Amino acid sequence: MTSFIGVPADRTSEAADGVIHLAFTHDFSDYAGAGRTERAAVRRMLDAIEGSGRPFLLASGLVHLTPGRSAREDDASPRRTADSVRGGSENLALSCADRGVWPVALRFAPTVHGSGDGGFVSVPVDIARTRSPAGCIGDGSSRWAAVHVADAARLVRLALHTAPPAFRVHAAAGEGIPSRDIASALGDFLGLPTVSVPPEDAAEHLGWIGHFFGLDQPTSSARTRELHTHRPDTPRRHRCGRVHGAWAAADRYASVRGTRR
Image (cartoon, rainbow, N blue to C red; front, side, top):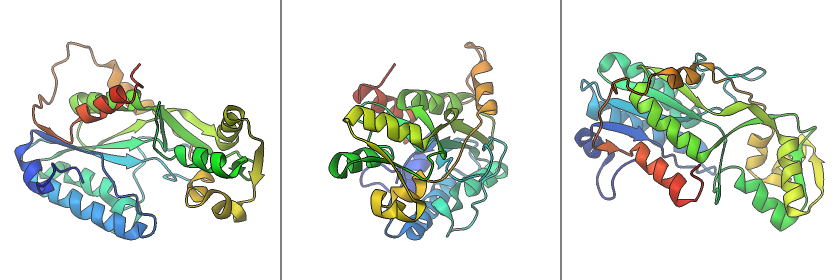
């Protein structure tokens, strides 16, 4: 969770000028349980800053939000219950805008890439290296949104200072990258052939990531671009000093991993 070591999330949140929750337990052996844990943690943090008017930025996702078309920022997440993906925590957070909290949903692309990337795209890389060849699901037309880690970090900071309450921002560049192009680039880089994996064999070839790799989720970031139209001298809506789980951690990640541009 986004708590300081040894300190409960609610107590740390209460002492902070704002909260940015970037964590999630990716336990795919009990994904529903991970979602319930997420919802409980988010609820405790929201309760801790209720009525304060302080910002609460929540890491969410773009995968499979609006099957069949591009997901836009004004598309509400269909996930609302504790047993849904990520425990429906995005809708839980945004519903607190009328409780004296300033919630913003940070919808990250499934591919947040950069030097030393340890995210989703690293999984098919490791599989190709150990098993060969590089594979895509079916005809490889399913698209994954992508963003550079340094750009994602900057967007978090921008959202903290300029996003209105109950706003959703898409940390994604472009509409999406076809999975066949990802597999082809991977094959070229590793000197491996690229194959098409039938959907029914996705789990055997790619493990748990096979399900996600076959999902088509193009995105649109029209409203997110509005954040960049603010004048540099526009007063910051939040002057946060002690930001729990701060954007600075994401910015430091980009710097430490050698991905800052």
